[in-house]
Length: 118
Length: 115
Image (cartoon, rainbow over all chains, first blue to last red; front, side):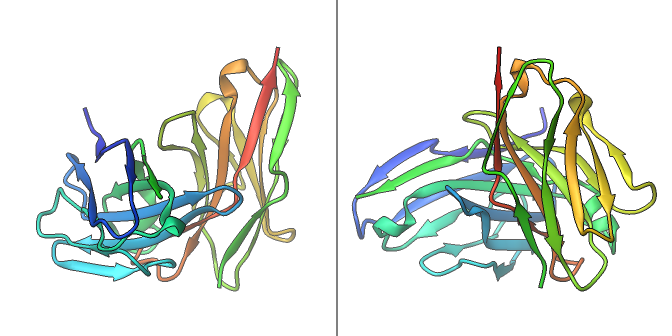
């Protein structure tokens, strides 16, 4: 089954304790992205990756790191989490194309990771 | 820069009634538009998309949307809703370079279908 898998689904941690949220996709997609979802703000992009070893900042990258060493994996790293990073996080992937073709392939989302930082 | 505004945060409606979820966008360039649905405790799924061609787009689960360039709108409609349509709906517009495939999402509209 084609899917994007995030782990863990729920995570409660304390300020300053490093954590990693994993994301893996089995569709051989080039493009992967992380979003955070907050009430009243919709989804905002944190980081994205166009392919292996190619990553770039989204709209809200502060306090986050990512890596793309393998095509299927795109972990999100919080080196020193703070309470304002309490949120619902989504990983997404899709195949890529040119022009409008970039959007012909829909984004596939994971089921989300609910993070609470106390 | 592109942006998306969903005009209603919550839309309550009775089962079998019609519904319209409103979305307006701003962009200085050609846009691609999308509606995604999020069921409780799940990720987002694509409902429909407008890339070019016919301005009336049909999606899954009986939903459709109409691209109106003059009004910069992309409202989502369904003639008769079911309880199972209860979910959060997000409108999105293509953002930045098309090579990045970035989407900019609206704030979301919660559709509450009552029996």
